[in-house]
Length: 125
Image (cartoon, rainbow, N blue to C red; front, top):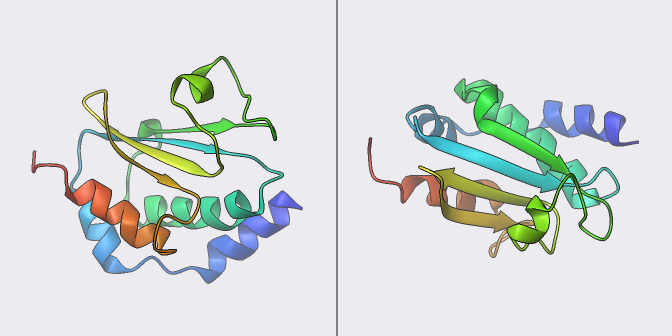
């Protein structure tokens, strides 16, 4: 089910150029994506996140995806160390420090706009 949902959501979402411009200039940004194949919100957001990444040319090696079970356990204790309590959660890092995080659909329900806001608060490099 996750596989089919991934491709459906990937191909019906068109990342606005505003997000692509902002993401393509950020050299030292890293993303940690925590989600689960069982989680409908992850099934909806992860394909769109990858479409933004692909369209902007953001490097694969600066995105790490952690698969979590329903109890939010995954490989090692990274989810517990970062206090991940809901999925999906996208943690944005720069220079090893957290710039911000997006939990589920964000506060406004416009997860992509909120993610762009987190990235834009980062000073220009």
